[in-house]
Length: 244
Image (tube, rainbow, N blue to C red; front, side, top):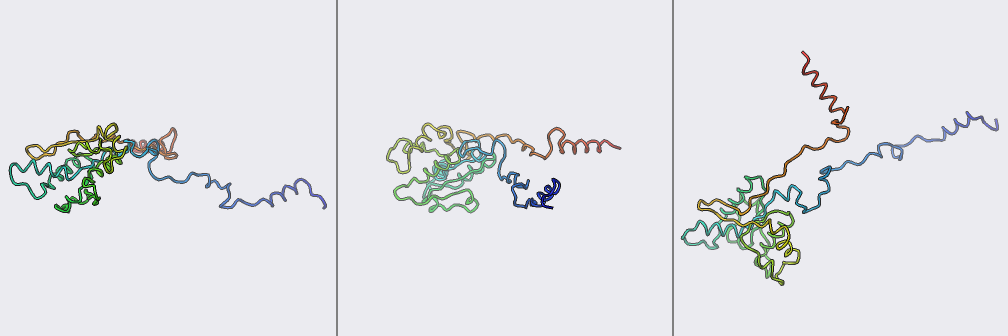
C-alpha cells in the first residue's frame, strides 16, 4: 500500500522511538539529589567563627609560658628559682581543669621555654611549640591571640596585652588583632588566673557551659510523619507487646 492507515502510522512511530538509556535525562535516578555529607538543617551553614559551632564554645587556648611561670612563682615560697622559673605542673593543672569540664585545651608554648624545659611526653598532644621569629620574642602571645580568634574561644594569659592593643608599630599587631582585643570578642574571652594556696588552678572566668544537644531531625521517608513507616512500625510493635 502507498499510504498506511492511522493504526499503521502509530505502529511505525512507536518503532522509531528508542527506549531511554541509563544515561537518558528521563531516568528518574538522575532527578534524585546527590548525597550530602556533614550536618543538615539549620546548622549546616553556620559561618566560621560565629560562636555557634561546637568547637568555638568547647575549646580554650592556654599560654604555657605564662601559666608555667605563674605556677612556679606561686609554689616557690622563698625557695631559689629554677633556671627559667617555669614548671610544667602548672600547665598540667590547667589542662586537667578544662578537660574535667568537657573543654578541649590547646597550649601554645614559646620556643625558648620548650628548649629550656622540654614538653613532657604526656602533654605533647596538647602543646604547639611556636617557631622562632626573628625580632619577635613574644610570638607565643600573637599565636595565642590568633588561635583564640580562629576558634572564637577563651584564651588564658595573665598578660594584659597592652602592647598588642596600643602599639601601632608592634610586629604582628594589625587592626584586626587590635579590634578583637579592644572592642570585639576578646574583651570577654580573655581569662586571667591564679593558683591558690593549695596549688589549684582558678580562672577568673569559668569555661562556657556546653550547649544542649538535640536529636537529629528525621529524614524524609524515614517515618515520623503522619501515617509514616516509623509510626506504623511503632504501633505494630506496641500491639505485639500487648498480645498474650
